Length: 415
Image 1 (cartoon, rainbow, N blue to C red):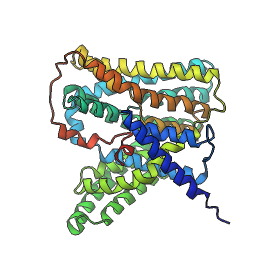
Image 2: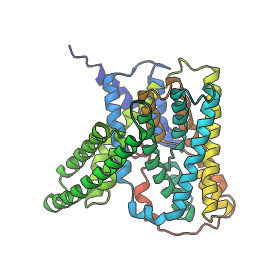
Image 3: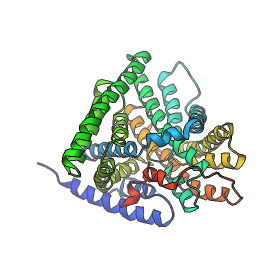
């Protein structure tokens, strides 16, 4: 007999994520923080009225695909090229420092650095990969409020965050493949390269097909449906045939569609489905999984150390990269601060790690705390850094950043 309890679960999740999202928004925080809190409140930690089920897990999986698909559609490849050398340098330093810092702090709390213990080694590296992720949404909104979005600093942060996401997803795919001793690294690399070639060929074919459909049908609902079909098919191909994370396929599908006619129309239609159902379920599911049952003093100390390392490494890495790119000290500080916030990419990576056995369930709580705390602290410190006169150079018009408004956590900010 079919159980209809999932109706109540969905109703409670959607209601709670909206209520807590509005409250956090009024506190000048992204609504994704409210959705995470909603999951914590509804889950076994507090009220215990909603439990993780196979159905909710599958819905959350679709939420991940939708989020990355949206992120891809909001990636302006032309603008990414214009940020050029500075964004690449900032992104590299902003990834290397957190990767090393995360690896070291995880090793210190995970029994040392036994390089003969492959599982422990991969777990330590995985913590570093989680810290690599950057959420630029909070930074974008903060800079916009101050009228500093169309500056040299804002441009560099946006470009570096996009590069962070792409390289972070690739690193996740490689590491998850390394967890299987029967898989050779060179085969993983070849499969990744093969997938990108495959995605490029599919993208070229889809571009001309989409162009034809746009002329023939115009703004018809079938066009977004075909786009979503392309996203799901590419996600399936990535995971099933190439061993690449499905979110990589979703992201690339979105990036391909972002450069074709009617992409804004597709964006609007897909976004409604995403933020009304799938995205809230994903964020709430993270809160449901973040159990405090196994949280003890050791885990709390690890959480504090992890948060400190996460903030420091992004600040130093991003700031140093900016300084090497010719930025002033003030601009370098602001760039580093703008890279500190973590968002749903970190949550997605953490969720994948638990599924692959690369992250202990009790370590999810420190990751959730990291996302919440950096979401709160980044706007505060970034605004404080602008108390002194900046000298930032306005280089691009703000309208060119509109496609980035929804990156990372802002799908929930729009409803």
